[in-house]
Image (cartoon, rainbow, N blue to C red; front, top):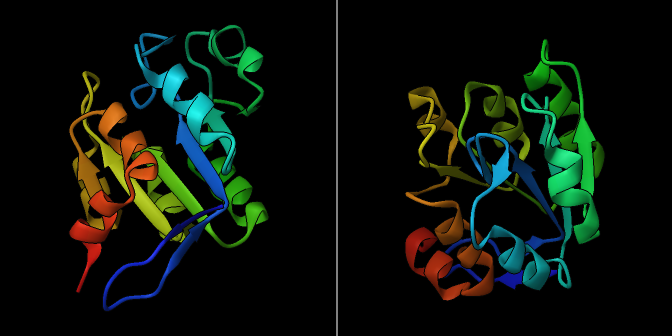
Length: 155
């Protein structure tokens, strides 16, 4: 668990990290440089889940060796699939994503981070995010350097 005390707000106890794959931690089906190293550091503290329709068919070859959960589902209804998985995890969940199909899981999460990478960001997701970063590496670093979240989320 990663405990983040936010001045003037509730303490966040992050036990699960849910990541969208394409456009968030991967570009054109391949992990973005630096993601694997950061996930290796984070997975000692939280359970990590990658959720994807796997457009490029690469998620298992790119991620299964890391000892994290990989969940795939049909391309249709991806938002509802992601929501159901996040609901099943319960409280203390952080979600990171960039797309239209991430809106519902962001609303369910205790902490949601929208990421703007090369694929872009669905503009409507901004209204559902707690934090926005301009790279997945910065988003993952929020869990490695929690004072950054304290500064951003304090009241």
